Amino acid sequence: MTTPFYVSPEQLMKDRADYARKGIARGRSVVVLQYADGIAFVAENPSQALHKISEIYDRVAFAAVGRYNEFENLRIAGVRLADLRGYSYDRADVTGRGLANAYAQTLGTIFSSGGEKPYEVEIFVAEIGESVDEDQIYRLTYDGSVADEQGYAVMGGQVDSVNEYLSTNYSAGLSLEDAVLLASAALGHDSQQPRTPDPEQLEVAVLDRARSQPRKFRRIRGERVTALFGGADAAATADDETPAAADATSDPAEPTTEPTAESAGETTAEPNAEPTDGEADGAAEDSIDLTDLPPDPPEPTA
Amino acid sequence: MSRPSDSRLPASFLTPGSSSFADFLAQQSPELLPGRRTPPSGQVDVPHGTTIVAATFPDGVIMAGDRRATMGNVIAQRDIEKVYPADEFSAVGFAGTAGLGVEMVRLFQVELEHYEKIEGTTLSIDGKANRLATLIRGNLSMAMQGLAVVPLFAGFDPQAVGGRIFSYDVAGGRYEETAFHAVGSGSLFARGSLKKLYRENLSERECVMAVIQSLYDAADDDSATGGPDLTRRIFPIVAVVTADGFRRLPDADVGAIADEVVAGRMQRPDGPAAQLI
Image 1 (cartoon, rainbow over the protein chains, first blue to last red):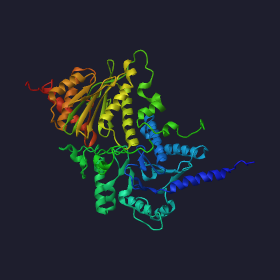
Image 2 (cartoon, rainbow over the protein chains, first blue to last red; image 1 turned 90 degrees about the horizontal axis):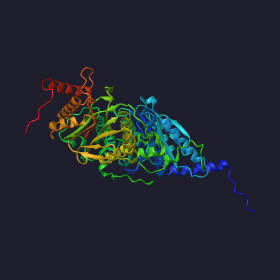
Image 3 (cartoon, rainbow over the protein chains, first blue to last red; image 1 turned 120 degrees about the vertical axis):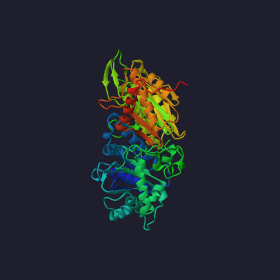
Image 4 (cartoon, one colour; image 1 turned 135 degrees about the vertical axis):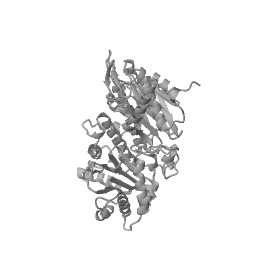
């Protein structure tokens, strides 16, 4: 005689939550924080091609921690949902809240259905508004719960210690440089012994209100990240150059004799270094390290 | 487990696969695709867009379109826009059924942006041109009913370091053009004009001047093409695509050049004379 194996619903959900939580805590943290001109995302990511932070739509971006194939699936679903909505209605009708809701429903259903393993992911969906007050940051967890975050937020890795550092050091209205420096320092406070993350291993992206294009998402890569760490002077130069490059369309630029002279900018990038990942602005902006990228980012889900 | 009452995202959203928005749309909401509707029987009178011209110059390529839409003998709109950015480094204009053309352009814009976001890299210019051909091909049944759209695509090619122009036919045939091209009802006259005015080493301003001259010639001989409207100050849309990206010339700049063209025509209505030999 065998007695049927009984697991109480509480225990079942707890086991599933523990399972998901463990997977998420294994990786490194992602920090999102509001600064004066928008929202900055900072993550430690040794890969240049497999992103934790991505563009979803004009004013909406996405960051995730956990299992790559699972959050990549969710990212693609988000891009499809946003593009479909923007195409069938209007670009202005794509909102972060709508996307966060769709993600919450999806994650929640998967978590509570017995037949699937829960997703081991946590997600930020952020949307910038016209002013700091209208910015929105949503944090979605593996079970589909949504939290509306203000100012800053952390997920993945050692959340508590990173969060503690941010809570004592964060203040509203930071400049971009200060925001990235703070985020990087916070990422280093993930253990008893604080360390300094290598700037070259940081993935940094912003939703920048000051951009003239409708698409506000912008990656900050390579030399531009190190410039942020290089002291006030270097940071200031980098900041000056960025809008100039970004505003190529609005600026009736002086005709160039050499077509590539402008695009090469301060770097020695080849003329074919096209912007990627939604930085469809002046090629100068992030042509720095693109030449090192493989032509096609690997697609682990394929 | 089937979950018909679920509010989660449908499986098609979460299935990896195509990076094409049009393919996704065909699967998810086929009714939103311009070419997927049941073609109406009989004739409808709808606005038609007319002439688009494009010409390369050493730094890139220029595309311009007149502002008129016609419906039979009526001018349906005086200030229609028929030249758009396709993405940061390319421009697209259309001639033919205005409603479908605008929709096709929107779909093409989303298609390019969608690919960029999903794949993390931009399409090559040939890839973009081929995608547009596929979209046009999907519209063939509508074209058979008289609702044709013929686009003109031009962009900056960072590999070739220069501008490139692609023309299409209603069946989705894609043809690369050298130097300059025009589509639409006034295109024959515009092309003839550009033949005489075009040089390879034109500056940006001279190239804009040449395409505006060609649009003037098109408007001169084709009733469906609108010339510069001096009283209302409505001028052709001129887009410049270079290594710096897409840029639409401000109306004031185009207006100044158009004024010069018109002033020249006051002296010589047929436009500047080319040398005989």
